[in-house]
Length: 326
Ligand SMILES: Cc1cc2nc3c(=O)[nH]c(=O)nc-3n(C[C@H](O)[C@H](O)[C@H](O)COP(=O)(O)O)c2cc1C
Image (cartoon, rainbow, N blue to C red; front, side, top):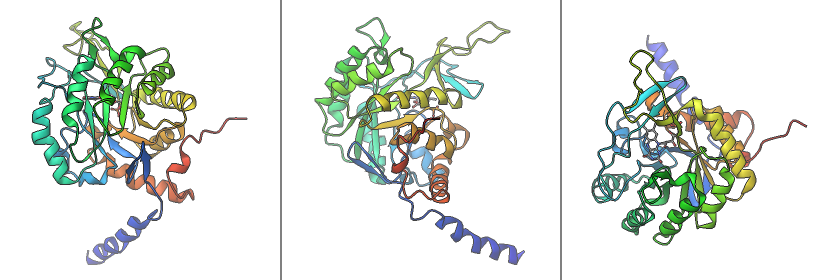
């Protein structure tokens, strides 16, 4: 028994030093992150709840749940449903509203020293602007991520991200209100994603987050009812990963200098490397957190080891490295 304990004690430091000299830091639109792994919006509670599992300052950054001008209760239940290799959700942007969020959630994140990427949402460009205005000057906010997968009430409820024109109007309104980098979060549910990406970058976005959930539906065959009370919901998890890799690659090819936070079905280190090779600078992890709350620190340690074992000095050197077959 005691010799087993000694063996464990000796083995631990050696395992921890694997890849210690590998540089995981990334430059995200001028913001230095210690490593490329972030939470994905809406999949990390308010942040404080995750602290019981590990020190969340280990993440490159925490992307918080999208916050709106006023508190929102969200949509009726059921609002989550498991699907093959993923899940559907129609939460409906449940959040405490920007004032309560700043007073409670942001304060905690600031005191904890977390690098925060604030995700904002709204029903009109003016609502996005108002939220961005309230965030102005708040310490600890490294960037703003603009969740463009919201229905535009001024345009028949069409999701902003489905229109380059409407998305650009939101980004321009936010850009005028803030000095921190602005990331436009887009959906792959469009025919010309590079076109939408060009529109938002033209309107002042410093970077892009790719991708949000894909619109889906599941029906209970016995009851005939949709599995979600909202009928439709956003599909996430490993099922959407190849769509995310394609989206990142397409946009990176079109605009190689625009930083991308890649997101969609990341589960293991190989997925992170895929995203970076496709063109992502940082990688956000969402649905996998529900399966394994420790996925963030596991990916950081695993990435370090993966790079060291293959003789890579840094993660940044792999960005955009996709080799043709011939
Ligand atoms: C339960 C749930 C809530 C989400 N809430 C938000 C949100 O508030 N804002 C946002 O931009 N994306 C939201 N998303 C989308 C995720 O941030 C992410 O873009 C998407 O789930 C794909 O990544 P994943 O497959 O790693 O989860 C949510 C996703 C889930 C599953």
